[in-house]
Image (cartoon, rainbow, N blue to C red; front, side, top):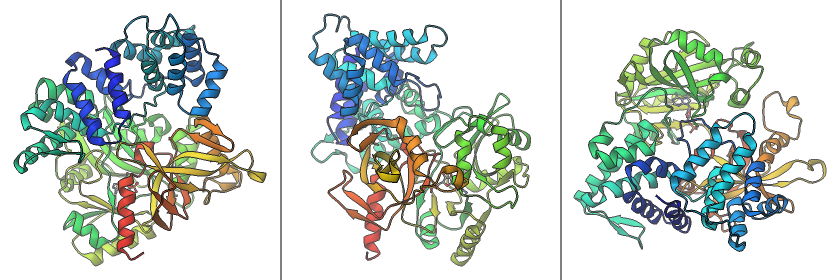
Length: 594
Ligand code: AMP
């Protein structure tokens, strides 16, 4: 397939905020995509070259991309960089450069999606002498054959910032519409931004959407799902299996305000567990090797060698996938430490053994998804737990199974909640006792209860350079939540809750301006006066007093008195809170009479 066909779809998707239209454009593209091209198309639509579970990085620095653009267009690298700072989108800058410059070499041959994909993929494999020149050539070769629009998306793909706003649900629905749409008789109402189906067909449609979602959840790869749907049909999707070795998205939960509400959602009796204040660890064993992933699917095995050794020694089985929370504790008092203190271990690349001694981890396991050839994801939760208890040899302060209580009694549940808080935990998680494991889902029968209702995980999208004693630091951080296509929309600015001290004086607690500045500086994409825009990568937790409607911010809402409570080093932009959640909180607080 020609790259221009994909670019045409990128432009259409970027040009509308309507999810229905985005999905429709993608489904039409899928209909004409051959089986051979499907893998590439599904990845490129997500702005990816490697699937989410693959840790390979494209690894093209900003400097090299500027060089490649310079080589292809002849424009001065300094000028390109200053335009980039002004506009904030290097793809657009490249478009402008190639658009205005009628260069003879441009458009010399037609680009195919395969050529674009292969060249960018090669960037990741190059090492050794001459790498820099080879990388620059691979990208500039693409650009000299590209139209201005094609060049724009090539640059954005190399930068891993496609920004067209395609969410996972759009890709899933596009697969359904492309391969089952005709059979079900899906009709579109573009005005209403919805599809039209009678009740009977709607049921069937929902079933197919759920099956497609499940196939994706278990494999975490849209290419495979699309291929199975196109070549085999529904049975192909039903046959897709969970396999250890490839990280999948973990199951999540929604917030409820009380144990009563918890029972209403998950039913009785509920399986109630401590909500540990650590970070998620998804642990795989395959080929005699343990691999540990965060909830963002980052491989952190090297940072936690002692956890890998403990799992290897104390969990029975040749192949498995288990799920739990790693919590730090103070080795002298044995008291749990807040997430903030152990989070440094996630990024640690040196002195790992030493840090492991200073900041030991207790692994609290609470789920199992696979064990020696058997997929446990559809086995009821209480049975999964029973099995987990059989295969894990618990060792105090090293590897334990999450503290649990089964009850249908509100008073008992409240007591368990109090006990959890007293023991230094964040709260409790109430789980439907017979629920299946729904990877990546927030609505599968797990709910959390924490004392503070008013907190959101927001992503930093901008900041301001400080003045006076704060000069040299970024202050006043513009924060955003995710709209329905997964792009950040602004919801306010936060400047409180951040410390002025040197981080070393803080002993791991709290976040300083210095730390945030160091994290954000490399992410700056444009500057105007004191204001900077940054790549949305850093996620923080904020507390606030109230959510208000506001025309000032692009989300349509503003947080009143937001305060940074912690840095979420274990979260990526995809984990940030959604606009839907903000709306839900907004209406909930109105319901409370605020
Ligand atoms: P939140 O981060 O507030 O959305 O809460 C969900 C997170 O709580 C999960 O991703 C886990 O990292 C963590 N957690 C702690 N204890 C448990 C537990 N017993 N069951 C499930 N998740 C837990």
